[in-house]
Image (cartoon, rainbow, N blue to C red):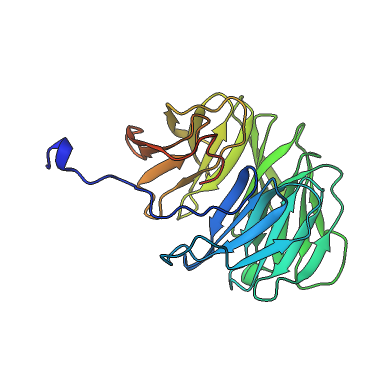
Length: 283
């Protein structure tokens, strides 16, 4: 093996994208990885081409939210995306024109996260501080949700989708899985307030972030705790976390302004990368 000094960095900054005024709450790539979206406290959503050398200006700006933007999701065909935030609304946008295709109302508190589901992104799921997740039919013009997922005792901080199953993370410390086909619900009680949930590439494992400063990897088939990752700081904010594309690494933001990277199997910290002046809230 190479001596430590000769090893290339695990990750390094490739591009800085300045454009938001205030905190950036969410950022994500589209499905082919060529473009990315960001949403912030300035109530704007910005579209970027981070591969361009001169990517200091966004390609497009989307405005319509009356409060800060908290969540984003891109449809599978990359032609539209959904956003949510503090104004209790979910917007669906046409990417090229910037036109609002749908404005979905029904939540009584801020909406923290959105995720597409179904074949061809036919369903959109929103998770809210009002303790519910709502399922919206993207093929219909019906303004009402087709299903409301209840059962949480506190705010829903995140949502993830795997096939017909919808996972929600709640501040009540419970990771819930709703099976839309079977009409069933399972619950894994983790104790600490949950701030995030992400899935492995094969969908067999769920990664849950919590305010006790740790990430837990669960076997989705039986709820078994497979591993736990710690070292980062998470006591106050909703922080993003994910697995790498090959499921070999676990990545998480931290309130100390760094990106933390662990080996999935050994749970050994591989890197701590300074990334921001404030908390790193989206990965």
